[in-house]
Image (cartoon, rainbow, N blue to C red; front, side, top):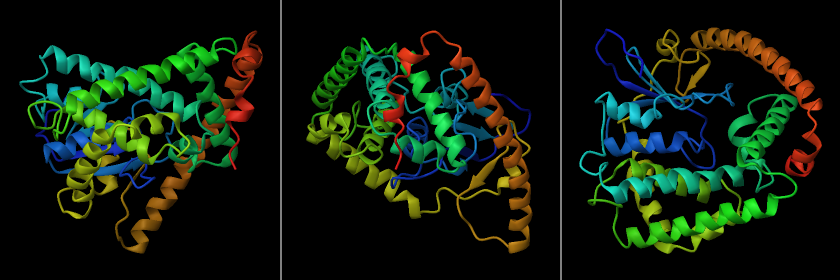
Length: 326
């Protein structure tokens, strides 16, 4: 977290937009949202709509301090190190806790990434990341991300089936181990929420609500009734119940504009005078036009470089099928 000199103000979580009935449908944002709900610390929730490919999202602001997702172990680790909220005291040193959390953040995170970009028709990814962008920009950015995920997993036309089997096999082993560890308890360790619960609950809710019914990963998760029950109970207690409470006051987006994070934000809907709102909209549109122009240039550069790659035909041979949005 970047440190300032003033006193710590109320927290603001900047995430990707809500959809699929979730407060935020981003698989990286949801655990941070849940972690803050577990802590019962009041915070504001704002949405970044035109930086779909930013690896800084989610990020949390507290006064002049900003914790980005891509820095120093992520947002949750920064919240702990800065003494803002640490739910892992007393358990973070337990070998079983460490190995269990590592399994969720590796095997299950890989499975979600594979499903989202390669194992489905792409509609979920489009709705979460690109539906607010013009169609050509959104589709090209999706195409770019599919290629990046294939490179990350080392997938080619020769090993695609083996890599898919390996990813799903690890996910099945993870679900089996987590189901045995949880049993009929409400939480995984010491009958209280920790960051492990936040990460896993975020994974389960995303898998159940954001992935399509035909999802292989979703079907494997549904085979463990206690894990599904665990998620439903915690969602009802910490997410559904808090959505109508006053524990998360809405902030004025203009107060965040001068801070260190990206400046194109939109808060949750709230009533404002029409004149004030129209001025904000004019400013937003001006910035949006600049953003879209720069994104288009970046995409064109990417495609020109991609066209000169010797192995582009091998890696991208199936992308036309993956990208078939209705």
